[in-house]
Image 1 (tube, rainbow, N blue to C red):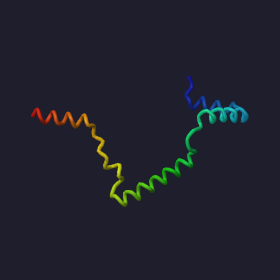
Image 2 (tube, rainbow, N blue to C red):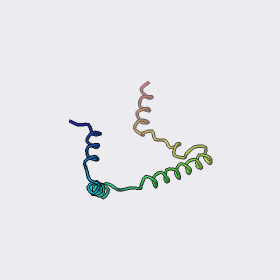
Image 3 (cartoon, rainbow, N blue to C red):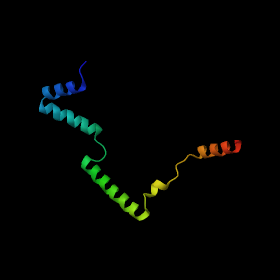
Length: 84
């Protein structure tokens, strides 16, 4: 059994440009969703800048102060305190 890299090398070496284009169009039409990579990077940079501004205003990002502890674990902690 060949490794994936070997299969890919063989595919690209033995496949015509026309077939590569057809294969690409088939793959792209089926799996192309979401932003292009350049748009994704720009959005990440905008969000990073926004987070830096918020951190400058509040001292930290507001979501970092959200209590995510489960109410169930709080209930269990109370039960354990009552037993001791």
